[in-house]
Length: 364
Image (cartoon, rainbow, N blue to C red):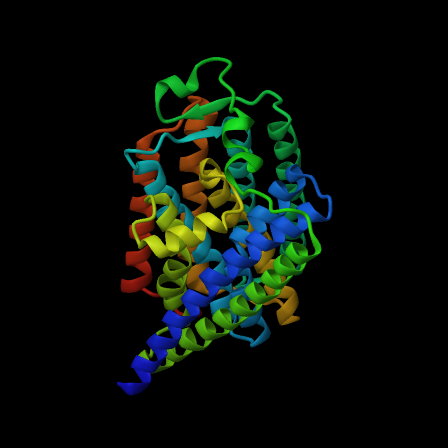
């Protein structure tokens, strides 16, 4: 009992460290990039989505280096399912949210996510991620970066983009998103004075955030492996539940208007590195990066073909693909979003969770 209590304590500490470290390093990295002269459309297309997926990337990288492949794969794939089926679903279902996205960008990201799921389904049929599959996933990552940069360039310079939303008024012909109202420079951060002191302070914030993030990821790897050993369960179960849900908590706080305490609300708003209205697309970005960056990096770190267990092949990948289709089809065909898309994704996530808990598969 004492070991179990200590393990849960380490797990909680790991969650706090990864949440604080990822937000701190993301905020300071964004400012440092601006200080180096990078335009905000480059930062918005690269740094912001990368920082949002940083906890999963760090944990998958460490787990693969320690040859705990079930945690590496589970963190990446289950993290994508949780972001879509929980955080994005609740964001769409929230009655006070006026959800508005760029139709072209939203559809492109859903298609990229669907393509990543298709590559995984095709190249893990023998139980491991082939080198061809790893290469194709990395190619999709390059496409993702290019698409994100092009969109941010068009958006920040006010070039036309079709805005769609849940309410019919958001789908009026010719409706565009106003970059002055929801752009990166409007609601993301107020840049401090460009000085040596501020530069060193933010550089120290990047280093401190990465140290906290690495320490938190190490604690989560230890706690998940220990819980699996203590309870006699597969590691994929903990990747699909405690780890993925823990990483999703900060995003849930934003999706539900920060119900988890004023302290975290003040910290997350101060360290925000993407506009609040961009959360739906950022959640899609995080899911794509989990599949196109975390998995290939884990494969390279493992230095062999990365094992992908039966649970991931049977539950995670198909559920993620179905969620991508649910999110893609209404904007593509009807040119608007619906509340039922959030309900459908949430129902799929609950079915996935029930299957992972009640019918875990061997080889994970």
